[in-house]
Length: 91
Picture 1 (cartoon, rainbow, N blue to C red):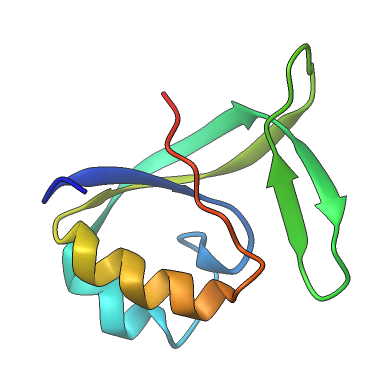
Picture 2: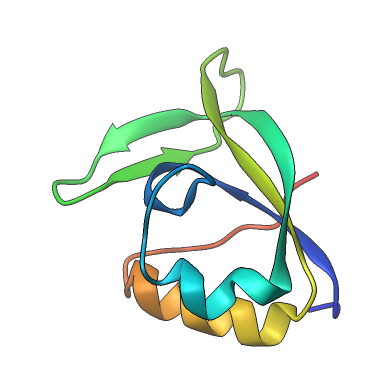
């Protein structure tokens, strides 16, 4: 990972959601603004999962953050998300 990346989030990691975990990462995450990606949301039981699919007209609304220490931040966030979570880099 680069030392500076962008992160799109939806759900509990969004800017307006009060999640205690964000206290650990907030100094290395700068809120950029609202965004959307072409993807579908699926009910995975405990949480939703967004999947980018070809020829998809659905959109997932979320927030974008500039990440200043991506190695540290992604390690913390990946642990929070759990083993089933898969982060994908997209444009």
